[in-house]
Structures are given as C-alpha cells and as structure tokens.
Image (cartoon, rainbow over all chains, first blue to last red; front, side):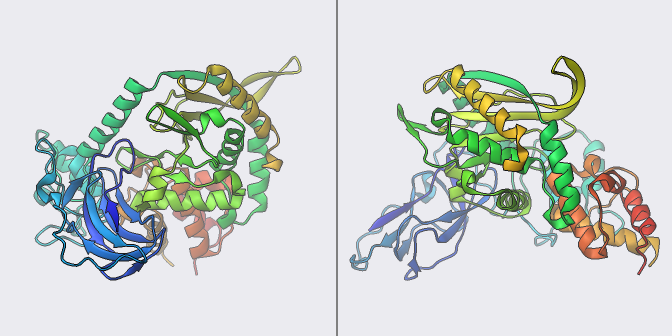
Length: 392
Length: 83
C-alpha cells in the first residue's frame, strides 16, 4: 500500500487545502496522473501521483487544510489486497497545528466572474486587489455595468481607513507574502550566498531577435526571454555546481536543467514554476512552455512537478524595471540567475565607443557547494552563447 | 464598424490574454501596462489576439502604437480595419 501524502510544493509551503479529488476510490492511477488539486498560499496546484496502482481510500476531504506530509489517500499497488476493514489511519483533519492560520476558503486561483452566492459580481483582479487593500468586496459599489472592477475597489479603499486584509476567496496576499517571507528567511539564514555579476553585451541577441521577429508571423514571434532561457539552460549544463538540490547536508547535481522561471503575479507576489529539461528544448518549444506557464500562473493551475522539480531559477526583470538585482536562492536549489532590464549605454569595442544594448546578469551561488569562480565561468559561458544567437 | 465596436474588439482581445481582468473598465488613454501590470508576455499575446481577430499583420515596431485602448483603435482603423 502506498501512502499519498500532502506534498511540499516548495520551501515556502507548510500546509495545503484540498480543493478537490479528481479520482475516486477504485480508479486506476498511473505515475504522472493528476489526482487532486491543492490550494497553497500562492496558487492552486494540480497534484500528480508518483506510482501506478488503484486508488484505495481518500482520507482528506475537500476544504480540509492539512500539514505537509499528511497521508491524504492510500493507493493499492498491483498485488495488494483491497483494504479489508483495517481502521483508517487517523485523519489529521483537526491536525492543523494549533498555531496554524485559519484555513482559507476553498477557491481555485482562477475564480470566474460569476458571483458566489450572495456576493456581488466582481472581476478576479478586483477580488484580489480587494484582499490586498483589506476591502470587503460586499461593501464595494459596482461600476456602471453592475460589475466591481479594480477602479471600484480602489475607490472604496480610498474612501475609508484601511482595515485588516480579509480573505473572501482566491489567493490571500497576506498568506502569500508570509509564505514568500518564510522561504526567503530560510534561504537567507541557511544558505551562505555569494554574488557574481557581469554586464553582457546583448546587442547581437537583440539584433538577431528583431530580424527573426520581422520574418516570423505574429503568433510565432519570440520574446527575448526565450533565447535567454535557452542560453542559461545550456550554460547551466556545464556548471553542475550551480544546478541541483542541496538536501540534508548532501548535494545532488541534477542531470537536467529544470529551470524555475520567476513569474510575477498581477497585484503582487511571485511564483517560480519550472520548465522541465529546458536544455533539451528548442526556442519554439521554450516559447510555448513559457507562454503556457505564464497563462497558468495568471489564471490556471500549476502542477506539483513544476513546483518541486526546479534545479535552478532565473528571474528576469524585463522592460521598464531596474538594471540589476541580487536575488535569494530558492532552497533546496543552489543558484539563481538574476537578469536586469536591457539598457542602451556607451560601450567600448576595439577601442571605439559604441552604443550597445547591455544586460547585467547576477548569479547568486551557494558557498556550501561552490565559489565565485564557478559562477564567473558560468557567466563567461553565457556571454559566449549570447554572442551567437543564431546557434541558440 | 464603429469606433465603439473596434474598442470592444480590442478589449475582448485584452481580456482573452488576461482573463482575471474580464469586466474591468479600460481607461481609454492610459497604457495597458500602467493600468493592469501587463508584462511583455501578456502584451505579445494581446498582439496575437488582435492579429487573429482582424487579420492585420502587426510588425514589432508598431507595438507602441497599441499601448492603450484609444491608440489601438486608431491603429486598427489606420490599417484599414472596418469590416
């Protein structure tokens, strides 16, 4: 009998709320099947099963919030007999630790526009902003179309003193901020970070991309993030000390680069699901995965494997932001690559001043595994790859 | 097709790529980026949605002409979209 437990979907998760079961007892399940949806503090996550068998018993009910590691269901392996009346394992339904936060109402991240019973119609973005601003959605006057939008929420928030943030549904920004805080406090406390950075000339990359996008029909155009991710994934393959997991005093370098992509959530917060085996994907495939990940961060669901399999992370600030950043590593990973926005600046090439498009890339590494030299070698390698974008 | 119809089309393209904004009032002259934290991926998807809805080829250098509702309507009209 296999115990299916509430997984830890990242360093920042200590408990999760079951939203729904997607399989019922007696159903055959295969490794990789999605069998449940769990709400974490950040997002609704589809939980995959890691073994083949028959779903035996469900021990947690939708709406229950249980700590990581709680047995949620049992799965019969081929050869196991059906569970013959053994007393069920204690369901830690009331097992939320006493100090735990009260459980959030169950609602997927992508709440549709329809109103919950007795609630006014409001857009999901407005609901989130209401949470953020501590505005009770029921107290907001709808706009001219009878729908509460961001503007109505903001007006309502401005009209009175801010209250303690509440959680009418969807993701709690309060909880998410706590989760990010807890994970980053752990990172800061446990990981002896070092930082190494270089300013890279990305003019060739941007010139190539412009030509490429002129040639490509609209739906096939690329964002510079795609070749950047590809180059980072390839360079990480040559830097095993920056790509892997450090668990219980032991470092496991990874075979593939499962590259976590830090995606900002509208309204605040950050989540970093991984593109699996990114080094094996071509530009079109990376672009497709990226598009899909962003869409699911915005309004859909992420999968458990995407949340746990990341072997390194990239955080790309993008247009209209800042020149550089010094990110914190996401445990159990051992490195994170931070890319600043691209800026045009004077640059000296062969003794002459030229206008160049520059990007400052910073690597945070873990001193328990490597030294700055490794990160410097990674940056030189990355630079080299970016100088020949046509080979990416 | 009236300006209003085109504006509706632009808004539905925006909501298609940012479903959590569905139903929001879109300020006519404020860039989408500033109004709704639209990032480069959202924006590209928005351009793709406009392209699919109108059949107009939109070169990358024209992206700034689509940054707000009013500008996008003017751009589509200038490109001859009025079916």
